[in-house]
Length: 366
Image 1 (cartoon, rainbow, N blue to C red):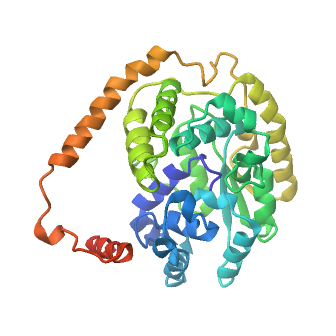
Image 2 (cartoon, helix red, strand yellow):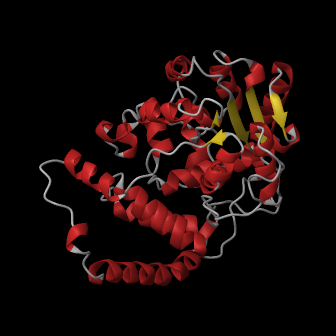
C-alpha cells in the first residue's frame, strides 16, 4: 500500500498491465471497474468529500474486491492503494475483520524521507493547494501536518506511526517493508524488490512497461502550477479538478517539459535524518521482513541543490505560451470533435445515479 509517493503508481500500473500473467502464476490483482482500488480506499477511509466522490458510487467496492479474491481460493490476492497507509485504527480494525477468513499481509514501500517531503509538497500543489515549499516546511511540525490530522503529512509518511497502527492488528512477520532505492537507480530495482516481497516468480513483472508513474515536476513547473491553481481559486471542484488540472495539466503537459527536479534543502535534511534513523532502528527491532536496504531511507544532503522556491519569474513566463497553446488545442479538440453515434449518446437521466449506471453499461463486461 505504499507510503504515498514511494513508487506505488508505477507498481500498480505494472500489476494492472500484467493481470493475465499474474493469474497464471497464482496471483490476482482484482478488477471491478476503473479506479476500483482507489474507490475502495476512499470508502474505507470515508474520504468522499475530499475527493468529490458520492457514497453511491464507491460504497461496496471494498467488498467487491474481496469477493473477487474469494472466488479464486488458490490464489494470492493483491489489493493496493497508498492512501490506506494513513488509515485510522478503526479502519484497520475493519480491514482485519473483513479479511478474517484470509491470511492478511501488509506490504509497505518506503523511501528516503527528504525525497518524500518534497514529493508530498508537490502532490499537495497538484491537488489544489498553491503553497510554497517554505510554507510547507514551516507547517511541517505543526498540528495540521501531524499524525492526528486526517490528511497531514505525518499521518501517512511517519513510518513509525504507520507500522504501530498496522502492527497492533497484524503480526510483525506479516508486515513487509520494501525500500525504494536511491535517486538515479534503474526503476526495475524497485520492481524486483516489490516482486520479491509478494513472492512473485522471477521476471513475472517486466522491467519495463507503460510508465503510469506520477512523474515529478521541475521547480519552474511547480511554480507555474502554483500560479495556475491560485488563479483558479477553487472554480473547478473535485472530481473534475483531478482529471483536468492534476492529470491533464500537471501530470501530462507540465510533466512533459524539461525542468530541474526540486530537492530538499540541507537544513531540512538535517532535521529529517534522525527521524529516518529512528525508523530503521525500530524496523530492525520489530522483526519485519525487509526487502532492500534500510540505509536507503536515510536522507543524504545535496549542498548544491537550490531551494525549491528559487525560481526566476522569466522561467515561469517561458512556460506559459506552451501551456496556453496546449489548452487551446485541447479546447478545439473537445468543441469540434465529431458527435458520437446515436447509440452512444446518453439518454436523459432523472438523477446522477441513473447517469452513472448508464456510463457503467457503456464500458462493457470486464
